[in-house]
Length: 123
Image (cartoon, rainbow, N blue to C red; front, side):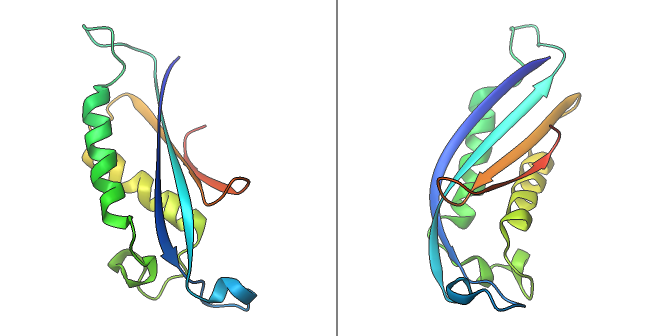
């Protein structure tokens, strides 16, 4: 099984809703790190699992939707708690819908600090 990983960093803000989580209920920032892992059994005729330039382009476009924004104000999170788990799923969905992933498995690992992360996809 071949694997290709790409990592990017960005900052965004949010506040948690629906419970009493102390300071997390107040607007605050996170320095996120997103890790994209693509797995597949076959390489193309050029010896590539996927076109990394295309993956980087799409990933940068998705990150631009969130960079320096307040997640709670975005349509995807309206009236929803912008949890790390939901954010990882949204990244997966946006990348999976935009890129040709036929025969490939996509996993997103989204870190909100040096120690805490959530994943969504195939492991």
